Length: 428
Ligand SMILES: *Cc1c(COP(=O)(O)O)cnc(C)c1O
Ligand SMILES: [Zn+2]
Image (cartoon, rainbow, N blue to C red):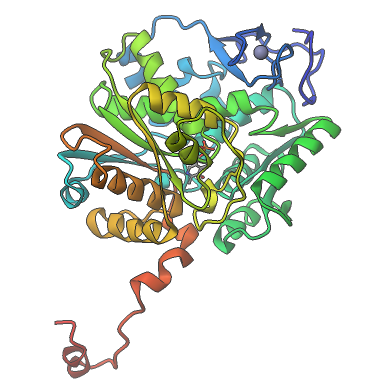
């Protein structure tokens, strides 16, 4: 397949043929703004209007039974993803099919009738990013990319570095220099090429786009292979529906960084309805941000359509994107479905981390604290119907952001090794 109008930096394939069905049932890339369609390739911007491109499909009939017979990872949904039919054969981290836990204790605490936590902290590198990276890796492989790279707020760098190591492809990951130490170590352990940039995520992202434009054969997962990367988030939506017994929840709370995950969970629900895999019904989508980086929440509350970029200042570093690429689509979805976008302070983020841990035994990172804390605020402010079935997504693991709560939960009670010292400690 030759590439007629190449608006994106090359990743090594320009002019060379793609394998037949290298992208499964995907048929092309469609512009989300003007609808213009181009051939599958390493492109991300519309040649007509520079709008973002999205993978388009021609789905065959897909049944629940087919999916249920698949592996217990995201490839059970391979017919709905831009990946080859034999994707299970290629080395990858096999993320997904994480647990959906009924959260009765947290529900009682918040005054909700039925609540579930979709716990993506149990993915191979302990965040939902393993899903998107698995799809990006498949695309980069088809494009014969030499380098697997990303600008990252932390978790993406972990996932790219690990997946690249397993696939045997060179990785280079870029992060803001002020990132939490555990997230830095969690990348450096997998790759020699961890680059800390003096600047915030938006600066790192700009640098990555520049490198992608200059260097041949680099696949930046969330820049020039972004359309394929983004599709990985749909698997969160598919899993939630399947794990609820093939039905959609009434409402769902999702964290918002670039906004990609939220838009793709909604896309997944819409696809399941169109394919007849779940019954059509209304559902509300809510977006969660931290006040220190809440450009989408600010626009939502102001009732405007444009996102005004901000300079992030929050402990929720994995959500700290000041200029979110998919922010306007998040606004559309939350408004159209009757949901909302809300934000909470860093102290509320910390409290929510402890609340989730002490009610459900789940240790989430600051992004999950943001999401659970926003759920609490939505209930308290009457923006969410407490009688409806609710799902909240935990996207990452608390061990990566220990410092956020280490002061809040207090130190151990240190005693001498004697029974007398124990009884004197006041614990019993
Ligand atoms: C990346 C990330 C998100 C949100 O990502 P989007 O850019 O909005 O798709 C949420 N939680 C965690 C822990 C993340 O790492
Ligand atoms: Zn366009």
